[in-house]
Image (cartoon, rainbow, N blue to C red; front, side, top):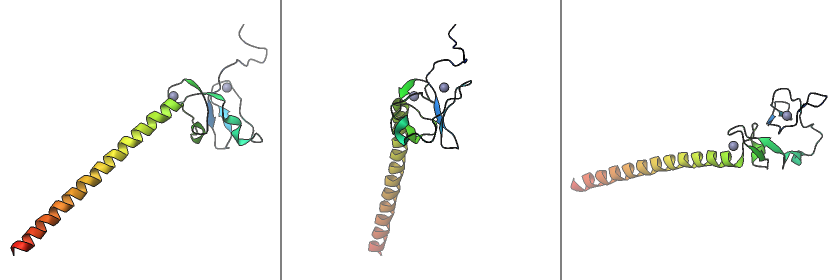
Length: 114
Ligand SMILES: [Zn+2]
Ligand SMILES: [Zn+2]
């Protein structure tokens, strides 16, 4: 029951890209993979399991940039984290610029008082 004669069960493949450049299903007992002679956009619109949250989602170009594709929610979560990093870098730059300016002004004042 539930099993076909070949032992294969229907499931959503959890795709990942191997060194051979092919998209394989990572689930145990599943030998499914996308042959190379398929058009490169064959993966777009396919259902896969997110490597981060485990939810099923349909893949688009953005997801396929990852060797272990994650869903849109997880990608936007990643981007959010990256933006916060950029903010930190910017704040650091601004702080350095302010310090430099303060130092320059102090030197100018010293020069004027001479
Ligand atoms: Zn599979
Ligand atoms: Zn996810």
